Length: 202
Ligand code: 0O2
Ligand code: 0O2
Image 1 (cartoon, helix red, strand yellow):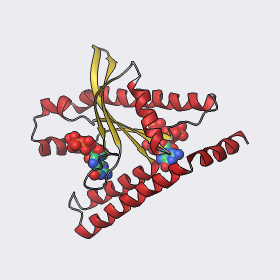
Image 2 (cartoon, protein in one colour):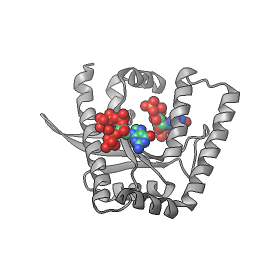
Image 3 (cartoon, helix red, strand yellow):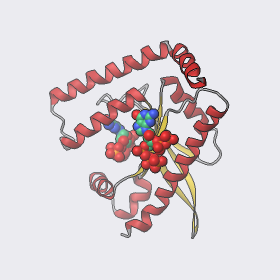
């Protein structure tokens, strides 16, 4: 397996989508409108993580393209929960990507406490051999959801997926607290945005 050759279109997708989504954020700012996007990150899944997933899913290397959908990963982080759905609607109406699947882990949180909106998309990349359709995952979440997921992810890594029960319970409690924080912030969203507009003008 030549990983450099295999991963090249994926890093192209990550870079292109980051540019495009950052462009959306800039447009909101130019029009003096509050952007639903706070920031964007992206990454190509490290080779070791891909290999681990291949083992876990019991697939062969030539099935990777279709079966591992987050080799190219984009994360859109928003301030408020309803911003997530604004971003989702904007992505749905774009003509440069095709949505294959949507997973709403906000209304249907995972057992761990995880919340986020996931979109699996198909995106055309121009390669030196012609157009290649590449699958990518876009995760859209609030800053509170992101804080929780980042910390839980670190613990999962530390405990190799076997987080002790008492820490798991704490994490579930923390997920509820993050959810509550999002709810409370939503209630004063307009107040917060007005303050940020004034601040921005200055
Ligand atoms: P901007 O315009 O300041 O957002 P890059 O290759 O640098 O474009 P990469 O490799 O994804 O992007 O970098 P990284 O470290 O993953 O971070 C991506 C962007 O998210 C960076 O901005 C960070 O400053 C921003 N970021 C990360 N965490 C936070 C956070 O908690 N709050 C805010 N507001 N931003 C955050 P850029 O890419 O420099 O561009
Ligand atoms: P990474 O790169 O380490 O984040 P699959 O992807 O096939 O294993 P599924 O159910 O099809 O499983 O995908 P899912 O759960 O919709 O999305 C997978 C990705 O969502 C994960 O990627 C995580 O980034 C994120 N995610 C899902 N559940 C959790 C969770 O409980 N906690 C945290 N912190 N993140 C979660 P990976 O593969 O774990 O890789």
